Length: 236
Length: 203
Image (cartoon, rainbow over the protein chains, first blue to last red):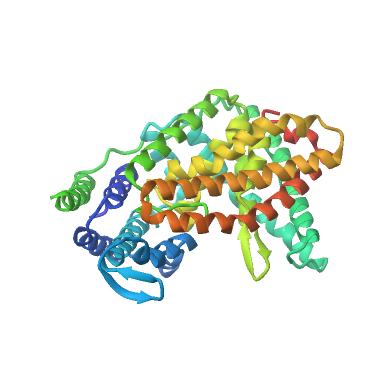
């Protein structure tokens, strides 16, 4: 059901999340959540990916906790001067369903994609070429610079550095980031020289991607059809 | 705390954010020299790595945004750096969202770019380390507070029921602003001593 073609998968992910974020009623949102859960199960992500769902931002949790009290309506539960309304509770449930649906869709459609393959797909989708080049290069150097950061942190630990809430910690982290930036600039100069030496003309060659198969189109049509149906159900 | 996930904001806010972000990115792409892309990319990777450091604040900890520093070092290129960083966060960690990419890019990058424009020239020109550190701290603190203000505004504009959370949210940005001020001042001081050219957007 999930298209194997990365271009269609990206477009489907954007459309599905867009549709989920615009649902306004609890029923359709719950249906969308159930479908998204099925989709995520079908994609068979490993356990590390499921763990991503636990990353709920602090303010979203706060939003879910305060909404029952902030929306006026029939009181359900009174805590001193505060009263939770039924309407507020259903707003909070709607919000939780939508946020989870969107996270599940991303997990199912893009969770297992290797980011470096996205460069070709983004290029094929006609994103501005410099932006795609920037994305691919950033991704390429992220691993290297992450390793460099880890070595510097290890060296700091070897000299008995412990992060605390004080000015010494902040100055040390400032020096760490400054050092990473200086090395990054050196690396950028070397990389640029090496690329020009090898005749880089300002464009990466991108292999043409194979056209999506009929199966890919069917999956794409099915997914976007379901999203459209959920949105239609919501508006009626 | 700066990444708003999918499914919370109202459509007009999402569209407004996307339009503003597209404008910022288009401006940055127009201004960037083709050869500066490599520098911007490797610096973006470094800012990304830097924002993964967790800095303890009392019993809790915060992650840096580094947007003020990006504004000083990259100018309008900070829009590109933030956008790429957010896409990577969504893909690698499932943080943030797709429909909110525009809003989040504007929330994080815009204060940094504006502060870099306003205070960057003096930070580069001054020979007094104290003034430089003070201005860099100001860039760090104000960029974080600007981001906090924009996130709160996005929530409050989306629904009146979000207003209580929006005001609580602003208070949670205060410790981050303090840490970001101290660290931005330290980074800028380090770069001014070691490699002053690094503080110029298109070196």
